[in-house]
Image (cartoon, rainbow, N blue to C red; front, top):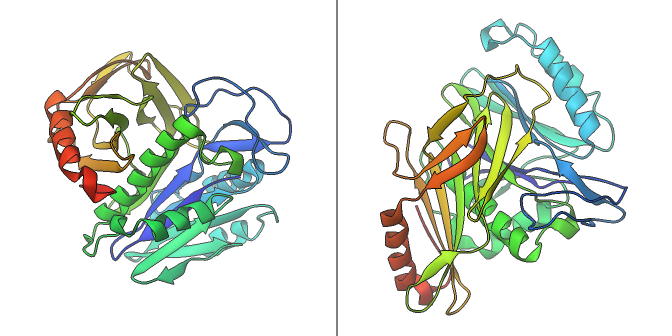
Length: 344
């Protein structure tokens, strides 16, 4: 079971995918979005079983988003990886993609996105996109209705102005992911519907498909006087090659490695300090329980003061940009009585 969604609001699309995989055998599992190892029931006889990537970049010109049977999805991905040239200009016969996708088993659904001739072509297997207002939406898996409800009940997340590069669509997906991880950690939202565990976001740019890297999620509780503290855990996501290293921290820290079924092994530095490119801060206002959220994008050539310390790919320390958090807290206090608020 899965939550995968794609969204375009006038520019390039962005996709969000959860990491949770399930099976029928109840067994203890350690999830980033739960404080304790335990047995977590899902839909029907399913139980949480671990983590896997649901958004796979097979080539810079081809991405797959899947829901259903992990073994079948990864078979298709490996078949495509073995059949396709590295460069799109050498793709003489694109029908090979359709031929492989047509072998998809009955219990798996997916969306493939193909970049060709400066256009993006979606290919759906047991699913299809649909238009809603000025939005193009794709929904897969057991969490599809939860994401759709989120769009419907939070109209403030859909701005009227989008950039051609799809930056706002990315921010919307990241906002959903940050909120979903916080709520799953706090009250278990999504686990009973067999989705969660963590999220990743993918999108196209001029060089092809890529994933949002060096991503930080933080959650805070703010009281009426402006005092605040970390509310649960913070998260940091970083890719080494195609493998995802998902860490939680504050307090303590732990890193989970979610491997890709394809791609070459990457040489991980023994030690490095990394600045987040995207930071999502969710402030829960104690006064009325409202959420005030901030998304900050800082490209690598203009890094923030925040940084995390990684040893062999595992998070071992962090440095907080106190000035930025204090500024967000002040804005949150001003927005408390306005209900949900999102600022980018």
